[in-house]
Length: 105
Image 1 (spheres, rainbow, N blue to C red):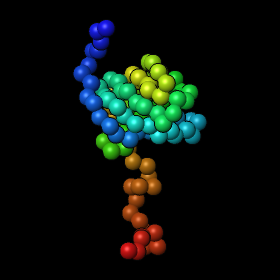
Image 2: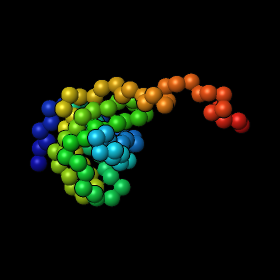
Image 3: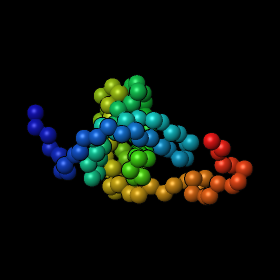
Image 4: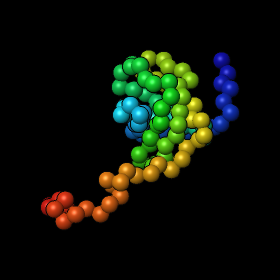
Protein backbone atom coordinates (compact mmCIF):
# COMPACT_ATOMS: atom_id res chain seq x y z
CA UNK A 1 0.00 0.00 0.00
CA UNK A 2 1.47 3.34 -0.98
CA UNK A 3 0.80 6.52 0.93
CA UNK A 4 -0.40 9.53 -0.99
CA UNK A 5 0.72 12.39 1.24
CA UNK A 6 1.02 15.93 -0.09
CA UNK A 7 3.22 17.15 2.77
CA UNK A 8 6.16 15.60 4.55
CA UNK A 9 5.31 14.47 8.07
CA UNK A 10 7.60 14.64 11.07
CA UNK A 11 7.49 12.07 13.83
CA UNK A 12 7.20 13.45 17.31
CA UNK A 13 5.97 12.49 20.75
CA UNK A 14 4.50 15.54 22.44
CA UNK A 15 1.54 16.23 24.66
CA UNK A 16 -1.34 18.07 23.01
CA UNK A 17 -4.93 19.09 23.74
CA UNK A 18 -8.13 18.75 21.77
CA UNK A 19 -10.14 21.91 22.40
CA UNK A 20 -13.76 22.86 21.68
CA UNK A 21 -14.18 26.35 23.17
CA UNK A 22 -17.93 26.58 22.57
CA UNK A 23 -18.46 23.34 24.52
CA UNK A 24 -15.79 23.92 27.20
CA UNK A 25 -14.14 20.66 26.12
CA UNK A 26 -10.46 19.96 26.63
CA UNK A 27 -9.06 16.46 26.11
CA UNK A 28 -5.42 15.48 26.56
CA UNK A 29 -3.79 13.48 23.78
CA UNK A 30 -0.35 12.65 22.38
CA UNK A 31 0.91 14.08 19.10
CA UNK A 32 2.51 11.21 17.15
CA UNK A 33 3.42 13.05 13.96
CA UNK A 34 2.74 16.37 12.30
CA UNK A 35 2.88 17.87 8.82
CA UNK A 36 2.13 21.36 7.56
CA UNK A 37 -1.57 20.58 7.19
CA UNK A 38 -2.19 17.50 9.33
CA UNK A 39 -1.38 15.45 12.37
CA UNK A 40 -1.80 12.05 13.94
CA UNK A 41 -2.72 11.87 17.60
CA UNK A 42 -3.30 9.07 20.04
CA UNK A 43 -5.79 9.10 22.88
CA UNK A 44 -5.43 7.34 26.20
CA UNK A 45 -8.33 5.08 25.24
CA UNK A 46 -10.67 4.86 22.24
CA UNK A 47 -13.31 7.58 22.70
CA UNK A 48 -15.65 9.47 20.44
CA UNK A 49 -14.17 12.89 19.68
CA UNK A 50 -15.72 15.87 17.87
CA UNK A 51 -15.40 15.83 14.07
CA UNK A 52 -14.02 19.39 14.18
CA UNK A 53 -11.85 20.89 16.91
CA UNK A 54 -8.71 22.87 17.63
CA UNK A 55 -5.50 21.01 18.42
CA UNK A 56 -3.10 22.81 20.75
CA UNK A 57 0.58 21.88 21.04
CA UNK A 58 1.56 23.80 24.18
CA UNK A 59 5.30 23.06 24.05
CA UNK A 60 5.55 24.56 20.54
CA UNK A 61 2.88 27.23 21.22
CA UNK A 62 1.01 26.19 18.06
CA UNK A 63 -2.70 25.69 17.38
CA UNK A 64 -4.69 24.53 14.36
CA UNK A 65 -8.35 24.16 13.44
CA UNK A 66 -8.69 20.47 12.57
CA UNK A 67 -11.13 17.88 11.28
CA UNK A 68 -11.03 14.13 11.84
CA UNK A 69 -10.05 12.30 8.64
CA UNK A 70 -9.88 8.80 10.13
CA UNK A 71 -9.97 7.05 13.51
CA UNK A 72 -8.69 3.57 14.31
CA UNK A 73 -9.20 2.76 17.98
CA UNK A 74 -7.21 5.32 19.96
CA UNK A 75 -5.30 6.67 16.92
CA UNK A 76 -6.75 9.61 14.99
CA UNK A 77 -5.69 11.30 11.75
CA UNK A 78 -6.44 15.02 11.50
CA UNK A 79 -6.48 17.57 8.69
CA UNK A 80 -5.39 21.07 9.76
CA UNK A 81 -7.53 23.36 7.58
CA UNK A 82 -5.29 26.44 7.49
CA UNK A 83 -2.07 25.03 8.87
CA UNK A 84 -0.51 25.76 12.25
CA UNK A 85 -0.69 29.21 13.82
CA UNK A 86 1.00 30.69 16.90
CA UNK A 87 -1.16 30.06 19.97
CA UNK A 88 -1.92 33.09 22.10
CA UNK A 89 -1.48 32.58 25.79
CA UNK A 90 -4.54 33.01 28.01
CA UNK A 91 -4.67 36.29 29.93
CA UNK A 92 -4.19 34.50 33.25
CA UNK A 93 -0.65 33.52 32.17
CA UNK A 94 0.33 36.79 30.55
CA UNK A 95 -0.10 39.05 33.58
CA UNK A 96 2.58 39.60 36.16
CA UNK A 97 1.72 37.85 39.45
CA UNK A 98 0.59 40.00 42.32
CA UNK A 99 2.63 39.95 45.51
CA UNK A 100 0.24 37.61 47.31
CA UNK A 101 0.15 35.25 44.27
CA UNK A 102 3.88 34.53 44.32
CA UNK A 103 5.08 31.21 45.64
CA UNK A 104 7.53 31.11 48.51
CA UNK A 105 10.26 28.48 48.25
